[in-house]
Length: 151
Image 1: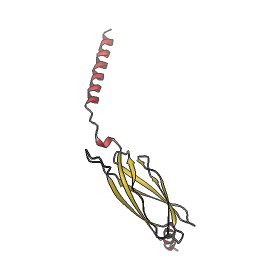
Image 2: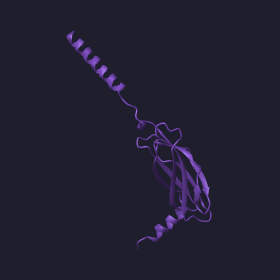
Image 3: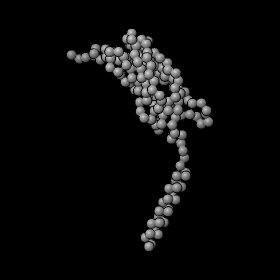
Image 4: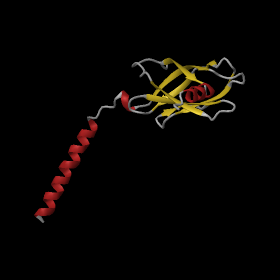
């Protein structure tokens, strides 16, 4: 009988302690998702006359935005309209998976990362960032690989 009351007292003490610790826990801004408006500029050098198709999508599960597919001409430069990017990762990073599809070449996927800016307390506007990516076309990269072959 005494064993049961001792266990009941220990259980009650532990439950009370855990409840108090839970009440004092602060909710930090780092615990929530961060949203930024990103203006992406993409420049691909060495494209053929046909240009290429580019697909941009999130590179990991902690980064969210709508996938973008765009056809680029020979100049290889495009400025995308600002779009919202959400990061749920603790360090607020976002990874962009950029797949370049050029005629006659296998698709090439390049990943580029960006750390999103935390909003300032009380600010109503979503933070905005510019993100520029400079890439080489798959055909230009293939030429470089074959010219460095050791005989």
